[in-house]
Image 1 (tube, rainbow, N blue to C red):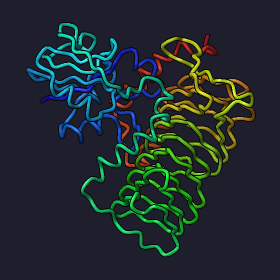
Image 2 (cartoon, rainbow, N blue to C red):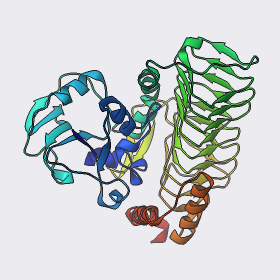
Image 3 (cartoon, rainbow, N blue to C red):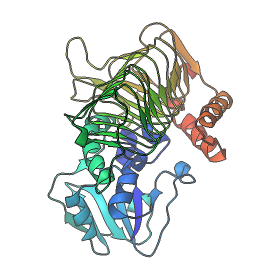
Length: 395
């Protein structure tokens, strides 16, 4: 069956800034992206149905019959079975939310419109808010760990100076190196990807996943429910956070209950607050609402979109949202909503102009074997225009 992962329009808005530069299905939660989960579960290639400005990079391939699945839906056995039992021109819904449909070629905003409704009566895992990414990460690491390692044998840990707890819950891919570290998998699995490196003195508690060609730096403290995407470096203290990939948080400083996109850099001694001093619930900027929304959560840190950077000693308050290609620096706490292409900090912002943003993206992507081509340039240009309304200093 031809598998197409589509973006829920409402979820796209609520998952900004991450969905400025990708479909929802390309969000990493657990070890894998949501798209990778569906690829493995259904043993199928996928394509995407998303906003027009993203469609050159994430295109849709149509056939006479297509299985459309919501790109923010994480698979599990019950929902997979329900989707596989759909008949042509039927759709699976959960309390009014479209999960999947089986139909011919259709427009992005018309998926499932002419289909017979089938209600799904089990619980589902839908990533519909930014903070759901870190809240679901520990559970999704466990699910992905079983999926990836089933029937396979881990590489051995040969280093005599590495301390291991619950080794049967640790999986090491080929080429990974571990030296003089502590791996504690008593509370959840630890997955170490191909060519990944765990340096001396690092302390890692599961659930934890580090993807291929990434590094946990010397003396880092990884406190669990953490995913480090491919080609990334991480150091300091991290708790319940996700780095999508190709990004650096290489130095001391705390990152907690946070999500960092691709091609980002976190300056040395940067700290994120994830809990208010009065223990109050945290509000974050919501693009769909156009204002601040109560998360209902006591813990929420930093959400940083692709290509954004911050200077040394940056201090982020609880529930800070940073858009795409922003550059934050300076003493004090910057505002808790920083739109895309903002340049500055607590003392004020100017606009990071597109030509300079292109150059920065080109250099940072080249360092990690990426290619900043015309398609990437068009995506950044589209985001620049979409976020113009929030760069109020320009008015």
